[in-house]
Image (cartoon, rainbow over all chains, first blue to last red; front, side, top):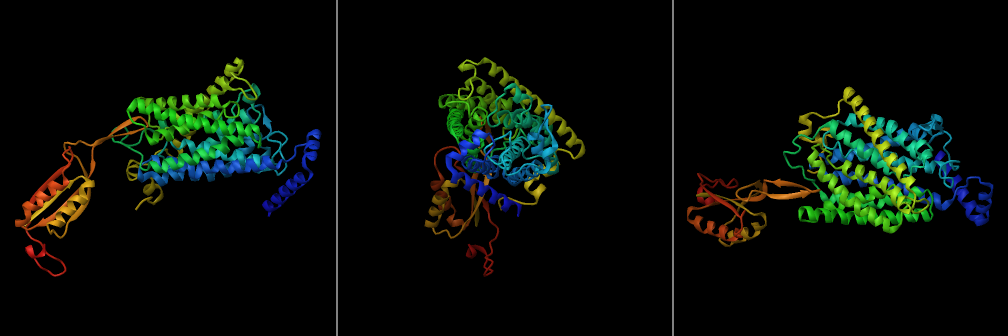
Length: 435
Length: 112
């Protein structure tokens, strides 16, 4: 009932606005009263759905294809359950902690708990041309995908109950504060730190949180001794395509309006993905003698992750450069991992951690739209961006460590060696993907 | 009677089957197997890391023949399965004590 009321109200608002045309918009701007813009609202609703598509099926298939066949359902399940779980957590208190009225620059207050006061009128602070609830649901998708990204590092061996507890704690204690600091008017935002669509909040936080997870869980049974090749690369490529598609909402939607800024972000996103794919493919070709499908898919994701914080601030030529650097650097990071010996099974650190980190720095170097970076004469921004990247990394590493310790002592992080041998699908879920 | 077990390259199965059918051999059992000999597997690369895959997919063909047909059957399999490169496979021949056709209860060469 409530939803239909809301839709009617929104429809009415849209109808009034369309009917009154430009005159009413001009009047509203003069009076500086936040008014819902139908185009902006439509785009952010659509973008929210696009980010959902990045998770289920995008990320689920991307990760699902990379694991062995006995773990594919368990891996898909990680993304599915996190999407459902974080949705509820976000509505109950995650959103209020991240975007609620500021408390000392560090956290949002609990004033918007259960979305009280978050209605169909625009917020006076965030995205003032779209309903506050639409802004909330767009941010909800970001909160969910950030936790889901981490599951690539714990693949094929984590206890399901432990994962549930970890996800809730991580979202509330790491994601919500970070989102507040950078996007919710917190202390990093006040410093002028820029993160267009989540290079720090999403990718550095999940990428380096994933590093701690991989180290604390320990390697999979037989890691380094027996080959663990991906069981279905076409599935991974399908996931890559859906991630790329959804990323237009992720970055394009982060303009929070259907305007030139969204166009800039959309174009930069696409270009960096293409450049990243070519760059990784070329690097692997030179290094190992063959261009690979998994290589081009991984490079596309590296390009997308890296451009994320910069997408709304950089031009097309900068996007090519950022994508090219992303593909090769992430490839080097992933190869280097093997030498360090930790089992980041699906390369969350090498792609999202390293990519997000480079992207935050690249924003400080290449920003030329709406603000200026080092290469356009503003050295100050670069310093702030380095600080943002390091603070996010440190906060995520320390916070993730504490959360994992708590979960390990109460529930236990790993499944038994016997269950691991059997695979997640049968041991955790009593199901089989292929029969 | 003899039991022939031939380990061959999977893509050679059709040619071997045709060659045996031309000789009038009526039936065979085929299993997908993995193994290695001097070929010693192959290399796969994922995200820049090389894996040595030791057990290579092969086809195991089992045919029971009368002693009088053995040589021509072996010759047909060898000719059809050969590529000349390493990994072509091996043929094992062993004595076959008895054969029973389940439907009729026939035994010996009549059951082949």
